[in-house]
Length: 139
Length: 80
Image 1 (cartoon, chains in turn blue, cyan):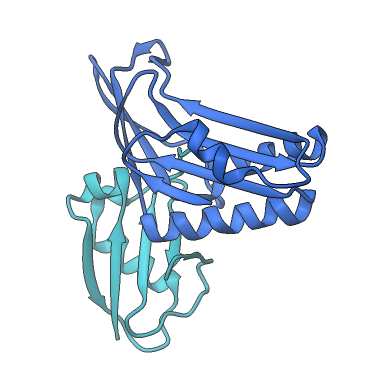
Image 2 (cartoon, rainbow over the protein chains, first blue to last red):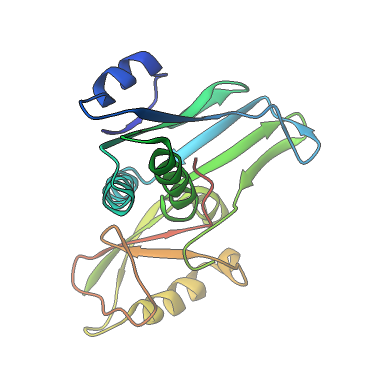
């Protein structure tokens, strides 16, 4: 239920793996490449990951979300490599009995990824290349 | 003891290498290693928010290092 991959993914295929009995709500979050950043046009982003650690952190976050909010299943797919504007970067899907815990768990997962998973984005613009460095556990 | 170091993202570009190995005295801690690294790589001096992981887990400066440890240094994150 955790993937770090270069290729795009199918939302339907991922949902097929997520769905199981007892679910009455599924929340999906998609992160996409924004075509502008701080007033600059973004042509593409280069996404780099510390693969082994990122996979471990993603799995830890998934388990925490499932235990903390009592949801039935959670799936996280994050891409790396070169992605053009509007391409999908990541997908989180959470299935639960009811919507409240599904939304809460999904929010927990994305906010945790931002501060714990070693993945970095470099924006390629006509004015140059810029690393985005937003957050960190000790920062 | 031999310690393996990996640099990621902007740190790798700043110092121009993705990995190196350093010899430290037995009993050295992450803070000792950081002083050696800062002495070797002028470009890292003054940078704020560098994150440190040993063998894939976040650590504090007082964490003791062991022979063969893999230490990763990286900038603030931007996944998701």
